[in-house]
Image: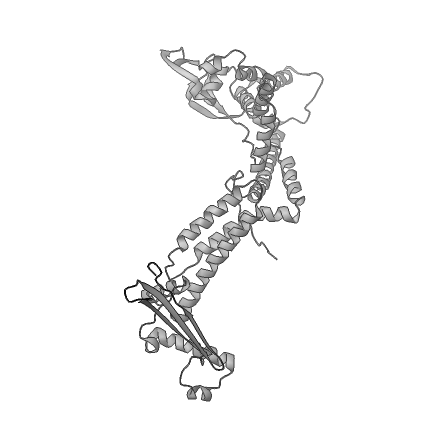
Length: 429
């Protein structure tokens, strides 16, 4: 059983570099943050409006001229600028000469990886004909229309050219002459001057509506319900697939954190290979079990190698001091190479190995301390002896080429075996 005590999420929009499960949890956090911000803004707005609103808001007629003038002033505010964030480089509107203000716009719509793939599939299925292109443009223009409406609300009397200067400066080509407001004259780019330009159609249909009164581009409640439904509808296999990138990352992270005093020659390269394998697994649209099994085997092999090195370093050097010769010896042992202990049992390392064998014999055979004193060697008695002879001699004649010869003798308590392998030069014989 795997228990997760705490999940640390990156703030902000879903990070497409992370796993899909992490993106879904980020989306849920984003929905909560958006809803809290929206409710706090609504509460502040209502409190500000409530403090200045008269008790009687609707009436049939005014009894006094002063009340009539207040009513006209109040209901004429719809044509006033709303939702201004600040001036934009001291530019002025081309028609009225008023300062151009940056509008308060709706935040972009966050999307996870699977949502972007769904949107791409829908857009591709629309085709390349005129009707499909028009429908595709409308689907992608929701954010543009919202920004145009916010811009019109913040800049009454503005034109499309003013919006282009703020929204897409590369489509505004400046000249050398100055207009009546002291700023350089200019014109729209060629793509903005195309007949039936979509931007012109959108600008004509946009109304001066501030961002807080527009239809929300991102429905936080609905998107949060989608995330919860997605997580609730996963079966055990699908949950495992969601966790595989996370578990792969954790495995590689733990391996990289493993501190080994011995310098293993190929551990760094193998770790880099595991990182590349984990990237391939996590980027595949559909999980390949065989590839993941191969990845697990590689992680297990490297982890075993590092554990063996740490274990040997601790057993040979319990004090933890720096010993480069010992580190090289351990690296050779872990790599499967035979090593020679200098000084044999008289050296510090040899004595430590002898003590280890002695302790293992005591634990395995229940040897008492007085019995240990009678033993000549801390090592166990040999079960059998093996003698190997390897030579190269010319056969069958003295002028023949040297050929390898092999002879092995195995001596046990109740058994004797002799094995040989002999070769001859057969080129001229």
